[in-house]
Length: 139
Length: 139
DNA sequence: TTTCATTTTTGAAATCATTGCAAATATATA
DNA sequence: TATATATTTGCAATGATTTCAAAAATGAAA
Image (cartoon, rainbow over all chains, first blue to last red; front, side, top):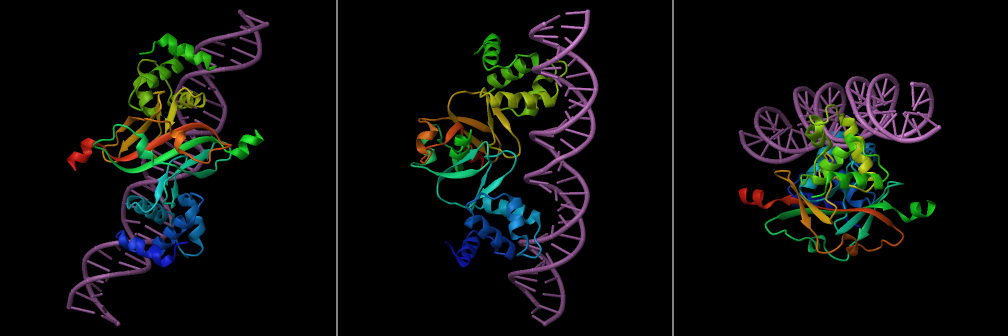
């Protein structure tokens, strides 16, 4: 469990001024295991922050993604969600219940890919889709 | 290079009636190496087919994806594109020029992932993002 | 502290890829 | 041919995300 002060420090190191909104959003995404959307982040923080704009949430999440502090998932093409888990992992999305779960990797993504000479890779995502065990059993 | 007759046969085997529109769309996506969007498919076929609706293109592409005949890419979250290449491969999207290129894999995706017992995996996509060699040099 | 410039936030309107829907057309079967 | 079913069409609606300009907050200089 990382402290609020450490998260603040992390923003500063990335050259991002730790405003109240930014710190709250950063904390929420980093602590969540739920891959929240901008809308979910907004709903969760709205009450605590008094006034908060959905636009701010969108802008701030983009800021964090560009700074490499969090990652953006496009596993479900009808919405975008965000991931504060910094460990290398894959994602599985159940086509029935919609749940997105983290899966451990036993090796790095890039080791599998050929012909990457000359490329500069900033981001890698492995997305799996199908049926989760619960939905598979119900079928 | 696969023939039109073979593509027609493939549709029939999948239980899909090979209408003029469907066959044209299937042929276009299978032969293209460009990962076309629905819009691109529509623009490319519009003249040849006399009348063609963008809605038909969307519906048909979804039909093919659900049948496992082509795959849908969500590597760029601002649009959806489609891939007729049936070989296992990864995708790289350049953050500068937007180009999406195929990359060979030297091993299967799933071998890397742990904890998949009980899951039924229908689709797997590995997306890499960064700068392509051309944009990397220009920088 | 006050002033001024810069950065950040806000909310309403606009955007645009995708979908819903109902009518029109094409195809298969009897 | 007549009838039922499947497919296509085009327009309107949807909804996540972005644009934009004004308001608020912050930092630096005086």
